[in-house]
Image 1 (cartoon, helix red, strand yellow):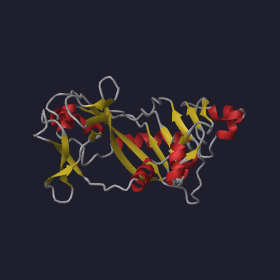
Image 2 (tube, helix red, strand yellow):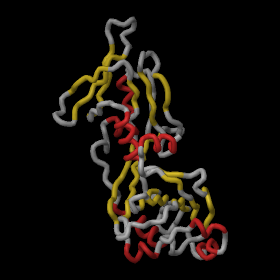
Image 3 (cartoon, helix red, strand yellow):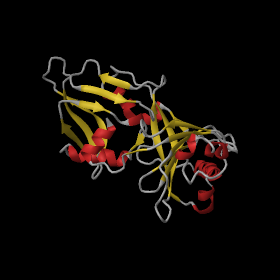
Length: 278
């Protein structure tokens, strides 16, 4: 699906690539170089690692930069994007039960004034803050939620911009408290997550808008990730530089299953949230 969509939309960052499972330790590269895995080993994986296994050869594994994909989707849809903070919904008081959706209430980013965006259908898909549906819809739906605040980093592209396209899923490394996921990007940068040490934000805080406007990286986890990656890559240990440090908030319901479907008792109201990272 993504391959077809990206071709249609002209998404330049979509590409097929091999994916390896890499364990911490030593000696893994020498063994892998003597096996059929050698064709998938990136040049920048030249440090200390343990056993390596192939998870995908590129026939059924691919990547795309989410920001570009979303922007291309929006541009192709001929819609207006309004930036603001949702505060509730409006309904038709003349309807039989007064629960027919007529708009979304929000405060604009520019002036902070509350406005109503007219609509007949609303889909609440606001990450961990989607738990606000409990207030917006008068308690007809329960949406317990936990926000998982996780740090990630981006390594600068080398001067020649060349970085072999192989993604890595790494095992737990007790030395650094990490389980790195390593994603080279078409622009030569490398995105790292799986840094460990995530903070867990409870629903009460999320209902108050915790970390909605600003979500800073945990510097101790940036240091841990840098050390873990440099252990794996002698090249980046020698000359690698960080381009960006950041953090995100992943939405996670108690049973790790997303909320998807119609909101009971309302016409034109839906929720689609709580998918975590997968």
